[in-house]
Length: 269
Image (tube, rainbow, N blue to C red; front, side, top):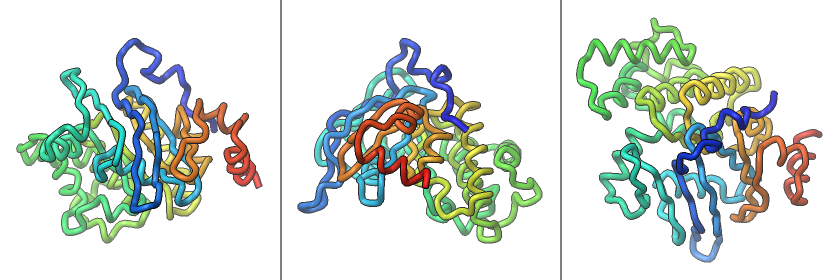
């Protein structure tokens, strides 16, 4: 299957980008993790970040999502009132508010994104309460609706996540993130560690939700098949630097950089 149609991306309109990244860089001691990364992301667009382990893609994702402060560069975000905020110019409480309302973060290991001491329904409901929901019956109804959306039996609403399979835990984490209708979601290897049949089902689910909700997303993956299915555009990273970027099908079908050619050829073997 090919990437989502570019004609579906809001960047073709006149509205400004949702996220604008300029000259982002991060070091750990003397080691360069990412350097001079710049891009813009529009509402409804999915950006894939690919590269081998150690290429800097997870560091980039952590800086974009305010989990880590970069050493240089800026990350500008267009908040709901239309104003532009520099992410690291905001107060810590303001950033935390963004993270629990306007943003989502899907971890590779779903246990990192779930409250294991709460039921499935309470995991979803907690996110709703963070955006102001207080009516118990409404919260439970929305939790049940979202369990259905991510193909979990509603009868499991009171079951703890520990009783779910890995694929079900990942789908529950997705429901927890998306129930509040965020505008931007970060995904770190969202299908990593799952068997092939579970991966395919999860990717179909993510693709459908991104289209339905017009989500902007940054997806980090080492799997070019995942990138082709989900992303409109790709960034290819190596050694902390962006070495190639472009529309997903263009990059994967006609790679220009030697490293990208190597990545693509390894996928075909």
